Image (cartoon, rainbow, N blue to C red; front, side):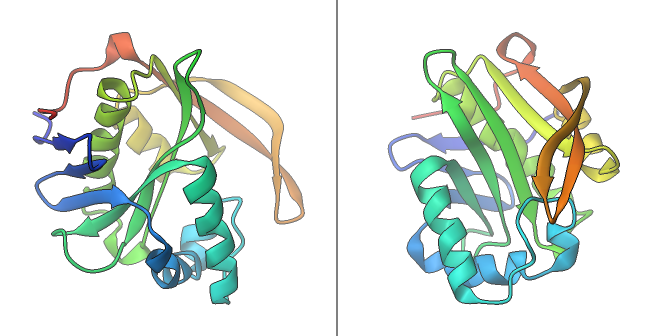
Length: 188
């Protein structure tokens, strides 16, 4: 049974059993620097491992301008330990790309599955998405397992689809369709 999620669409906040998911805000830059300053977090990611606050501020501005991304805050207090949400949202086709990251200290606790399920529920219920895409590198087993647990289906491999850290990367593409989703909780 999936955990109950409370969606406050007016405030764009989500509450799960262990997390508050809220919109990112300018004050999150130091926490993003800590998150993206860990090479384990950025290993399979197009973001370089960060060393300066200015780098986090640039990424945060892009998130605020082009993404519908949530900060993951354990218990609802304190600073973010990860992010989860959408980019490349096309309202006409009702399709978006999905991404997430989590501080290494919190891996293996089921927090990202909890957060991702809530954010996907928000996407289908509030954003009225029909299709959600997700990409992983070929060997990011943890991410592939998470996507499978969330109901995503692998559609194939995209050769040399992405370029970061001075190399081309083959990517696996996954999709989740509205018709395969079970509602996750009440909205208001």
